[in-house]
Structures are given as structure tokens and as C-alpha cells.
Image 1 (tube, rainbow, N blue to C red):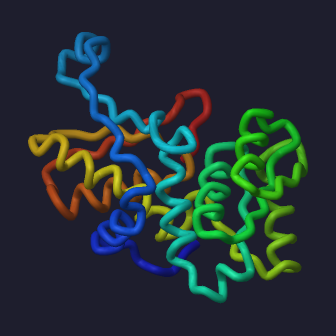
Image 2: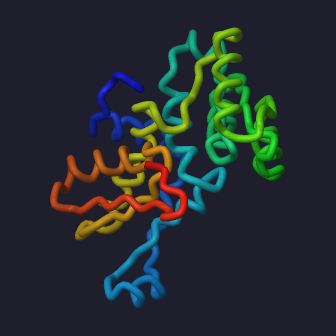
Amino acid sequence: MSEAILTLDMVRAARQRMAGVAHVTPLEYSHTFSRLTGNDVFLKLENTQKTGSFKIRGAYNKVMSLSSEEKARGVIAASAGNHAQGVAYAAARAGITSVIVMPEGAPISKIMAARGYGAQVILAGGGYDEAYRRALELQVTSGATFIHGFDDVEIMAGQGTIALELLEQMPDLEAVLVPVGGGGLIAGIALAIKKSKPAVRIIGVQAEGAPAM
């Protein structure tokens, strides 16, 4: 676990770092979900973000927060897809090398995207856990900085920039529903929202058949 403590100032600093890099994604009214729930529901379209997901926010913030010495040694990550693309893109923007360890069954589109951003992609194991272990082994031998997909305050701070945009796009926000996987996304969003508007409810959502927490 990361020992640093996430703060609102870190989220604000992350936003400054990624200005002109990450998109301010649109917030659009959903007629379907509004009708189903009886509430006004809006969707934050992170699928329109660079690399296709919110992961670029945390990855870019983490990479750009590294010291010059750390950047010189490059970065390494383990991912089945979206984090891989985020780290590869961020490393390319920073002009540093990146190694991404992905499961052998990772989608070919994700593999090609990471390679397209200049990453060295290594396929290892049948699932994420094996790829993760292999990445840690390579990190030890190479001296590169390991970029965790969620358990890092700079990653969380980057993801938390979504909340800053939400508060500007909808000042009368009442509740935010956040998908939960590793927890980095909801940690960043919850911190930024609660420190700015404590009355807003934060609700984590995960698949009933595959709970992550």
C-alpha cells in the first residue's frame, strides 16, 4: 500500500499537470437512465477520453510526478488493457521508455495500442496476477519505476480530476455513482467531492457476479 496521504491539493496539482493532455470529458443527460430511475441522470463520458478510458488521467499524473532520475530509468506496469495504454501514452509524452506486461489472453487491440504508443509489451501468464508478478520481477532487475494501476496516491489524484470537472459542469450535484474495481477511481473522486461539497453522496457500484471488494 502507498504510505502517502491523498489530498485535494494533490488532485488540483494533477489537473494542472494534465492540462492540454487529458480531455475535459462531456457530461450528458441520459434519457434512458433518467426514465428508469425517476431521477435526472447524467453520464460522464470517459470513453471519449484519450486512450479510451479514464486511466490516462492517473497514469499521466504519476509519470509526470516522477523525478528526472526516475524518468531516466523508465517505467513498467502490469495491465490487461486500459492502464497499459494510459502508461504507454504517458511515457511517450514524457519521452521515456515503458514496459507493459500483459496477460497472454489480453485483447489484441489493447496490445497493439500499447505498442503503438511505443511501449515494449511482454505477454506473461494466463491472467492479471501472473502478469503482475512478472512485472515486479522485471522492475527489480531493471530499476524502472512500477506504475500500479490503482494503489498509488498520484494515480488516485489523477482519477480525482474527474470530480473537479463534475463539480464545475454540475454545481448542484447531489450524488455520484462510481464503478469500483481496484478502488483508485472511487478513492480519487470521493476525496475531491467530499472535500469540496461534503453533502454530495458517493455510491460505489460493482457487478454482483464479480465483486471486486
